[in-house]
Amino acid sequence: MKIRIEKTTAPKTLPAADNPLLFGTIFTDHMFIMDYNSEKGWFDSRIVPYGPILMEPSAMVFHYGQELFEGLKAYKAEDGRVLLFRPELNAKRSNDTCERICMPTIPVEDYVQAVKTLVDIDTKWIPERPGTSLYIRPFIFATEPALGVRPSSSYMFVIILSPVGAYYPEGLNPIKIWIEEEYVRAVRGGLGEAKAGANYVASLKAQIKAHEAGYSQVLWLDGIERKYVEEVGAMNIFFKIKGKVITPVLNGSILPGITRRSCMELCGMWGYEVIERQISADELFSAAGNGDLEEIWGTGTAAVISPVGILRKGDEVVKIAGGGIGELTRRLYDNLTGIQLGKIDGPDGWVTEV
Ligand code: PLP
Ligand code: COI
Image (cartoon, rainbow, N blue to C red; front, side, top):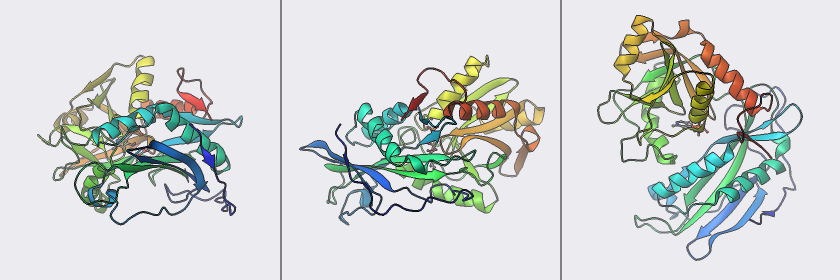
């Protein structure tokens, strides 16, 4: 793919070394854009100065939400290399979401090339303090100016970059999770396993409820029986029960996380039995009551590996791992971030140099 490059003539000031880099609040100098229409397919890939995008008020995305996004990160290794973590899996998942919400797919090589080229141009924006990285947000949205409910005939693919610190204000300290009983995020047959913006709109009401009660994130139950745990607002969830690693099985309403998959692979390599199955909130509370629920952690690009210290459902509240960070949670955090930063050799193909 040929990418036209127009560099900014007014580079911004980089954030100061002590800037806390609140998640997703600062954007770099450039962005990638590519257009699509049904006659030409994808065309005019370009990197231009970061800035507003001109759109028709009738653009379909504003009315029916035909939009998807991805999230990955670039890391600066100690030896100066710039590394990406399994970016082709984001490209593939983006294409899976495209299929589900009736958008044109993008060849994986072109997707990864676009990410790499943009990161390479804004490489000076990768922060280097421990726990920081350059968050990469690719997204695709419907641009056709029309109000009929049908797939758009034109789209834009955009990538923006944001230097970030921890996703949760708690950093690596354990977070408090609220099991939501009133609202659901997704149902089987719906959009749950797709990374469509619509899923996140569906989650807002419960997230506010959880925040008001002093909890960082919602743990969703299945939309049918409201019994089995599915995933957290911005991450997948894992439990260590009597030495075994358990995570909810992908059932169509859970996002197939890349960190989830990597975490399962690492635990498997370390000799843990890793089980994907349905697991009910009741089972979790009874395991906690018996002392069998040893650790809970969430996995995600933004969230990395996040220990869960408190779990609440209705009036039931349990403390996990004494409210601290479990041993396996810590090992996963250290190894995953070690691999991402190029300090530890991971399995073949996990890190790609820009
Ligand atoms: N689940 C949801 C709802 C998410 O938004 C994310 C974040 O991308 C994840 C899980 C974790 O996915 P990944 O590990 O690919 O970032
Ligand atoms: C990510 O981890 O990349 C996500 O997309 C989560 C996001 C909703 C902040």
